[in-house]
Length: 408
Image 1 (cartoon, rainbow, N blue to C red):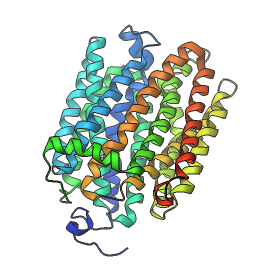
Image 2: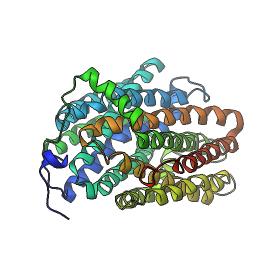
Image 3: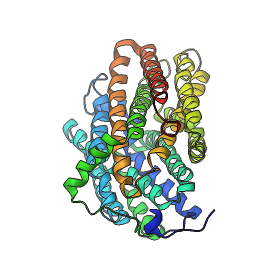
Image 4: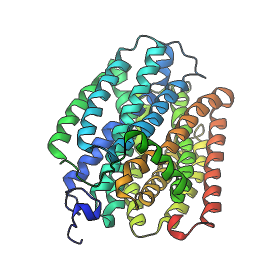
């Protein structure tokens, strides 16, 4: 590894170009703990539906409210990382996130629950994506894919463990305890960030806040890679959320009637995706994005075959989860490695614009899954997921013919 270049010229922070492992680990840990707050509800849909008298077909609106908060964060909060010092911004957001989690835990009506979930999505997403942008800006270009991949691996593990943690705690002491415990965990994380992450003094824009927000859409209009990779992200996250949003409805009902702890444990079999995330980042560093994209999208499509056989054998569910999560995480990390190659002073806006596609896809997938499940059951859910995944593969095949190799 070459020695560090000055931050002003390299676009990194005052950290050395080869980030210490403890810093990379802290990025991954903080990102995983932050994103978990956005996904706890996915394992609790049946209990929320019961306690707040929401119909099974409409309970997906809880996840949609959270994803609306995600979209607002990407539009309004994540770009702030290009304007103000990122560690200070994260600390403020973390305190506000803890308060939002307390509101969820104390909600007494469906309206209050939806509002608190929106705030949780807003602040949890701002923290998670701010950390990814931080990791990208702090790392040397030659290791950026690896560092972003490791941080994204933490996000993925946080997402998976969110289901296990939510299921276990809710089985023991009720779903409200999930959010109250997480609020306390955010306080501990704030201490770790203060002690473990230095201030980041990389390049920042001098724009006003309104101009900063407008410039994100200018980047989106001009950045062809961001456009194509954003559409892939929309379709990929829609497919993933079709599966995960419907799984709890399938496994919590007869003939399975599994506890939330058991349902959450199924998510752990996809933890191999976190390892693949780092590997996909290394391929992006080597310029092999096209190969990684093709394999990942094929896995995403193939996953729905064993998933459709879940009612015949739970081993098919395990195989399908592994394929789905490996494919999804590989394409996600490859996308991020590609869009972070330019404009270090705009990493916050780039990740914000990219993840807008994620929020749209996740929200659509969640509401589509619960609606289709109520109408056509698990077979309908698998058909919807397979169609979305195949559309992603066809879109990539069509666009990569028209783009340079480095943009596909």
